[in-house]
Length: 286
Length: 349
Image 1 (spheres, each protein chain N blue to C red):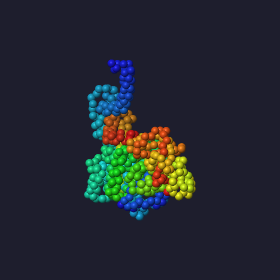
Image 2: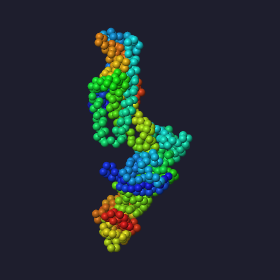
Image 3: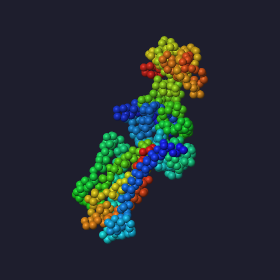
Image 4: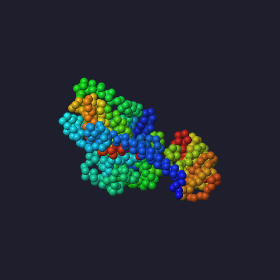
């Protein structure tokens, strides 16, 4: 009969309360993050009229996708290609520069204040809204005749996302045991071999995690892309914004384009997910 | 296989000098243990030999050739780290193969050497495992394998056993020693464990504060410590060291006159004798002490005595019934007495 003592009931009630609180928060987080995406995904299968009338039940149509992908006036395909080029190239640049700079910072015996100052600056840089830089960059790139080109946006995105990559890569580098590098040196590795065969493989989870994040950030970046591209070099977010026109906002086509644009990021996440979780918690528990 | 020499090796970190001129010659095939407490500079010494740390001045010679300006890879030395430093993303085979691959050996020779090394270290069954799937002892063996497979001129060991549990440590101790005797590779073995140093090595270099206190065979360190520091460091429990005054015919300490064992320059001396050399019972030159504590560990009886305000350790192999508070007469045979100069700490006999 111990199961019904008041103490036992109080414990059971406390456990229930805790479960409701924690799981409730989880459910709320799920709704808040998945909700908007689901709404957009559903909208992409509605007609503009159905959407604007706010109907809950509807007959799904694929005309929005047809229009976005194959419409005569649609620029989605070229936007997509532009985004792939800009995001991939800038990610590769960010990773190369970020990795080498991080290695220098962590391993080349810089005085502590230099390291801290550098990382602090990298953090502060992230606090500057990118849109404030967009105007200056527009002028700069136009002056050196790089305006409205992929190169301009690639360089801008590299600059924008380098600080974050540097932060992440430095902390992953810090977790690579120094003895491993020393063992490799004694085993006969030169500097390139050391990086390629030991340091990079050991911190691969961190590298993949960082690269996926940088790629997604570049993929989604809007204000700078808007300033530095024209009709032929526009990236996906700029293209999507153009569905909101002066006289009409093509909500449903916009939704279809959004869903399509999420695919690469989704693929990157699925591919990198295991690394991201592993990478972002590396060193937390040994 | 090489002769290793160090000449007046010095190292400073900023204003702090941690090695104050180390000079030593290590013969071809010799196993030298570098012993000392943490912070004595023994790891720095080893890292300078490996080329991982730059010396402030001095020289390191392997087979008569200066290697001080060479990078680690050009020195042909192998090192076993305390943390093993196995490459976590490589299998055991790849770990052992890594130095061979970098040395540019052909595939067949590499495979042959890996097989031979794995057989030597009982690792054949584990060649395709990753380090994380191995036990501590097995990881230690892989680290050894990676070192021996290259057939380097010199082995460097940086406290390789201190991450293992006590039982495994004893087993690995003899394993490493046997392996070294078979391969006859000049070895420098850094440890803070005096049992390891004394049991494994041909000679022990005892470091203290960046200086060599004594560099001699293990039993020499035990039987004839060069100074008070060595006397107090080597042996467990440590040697009893008591202040003594030299008189005309002998040395006075603990309220008794000990026979003279050495010529003295100044009367202020330190008399030393090991806990295991004290005998209980009346004899010429006997002294008395009151039992404070006795501990019997089965194989030996440890007694702490208070002899006129000086604490003494006794370590007896026979089981004598003693009670705290009891007064015991003790003596030490003259051949087991050590006499040191109190000012310089140097050995006199």
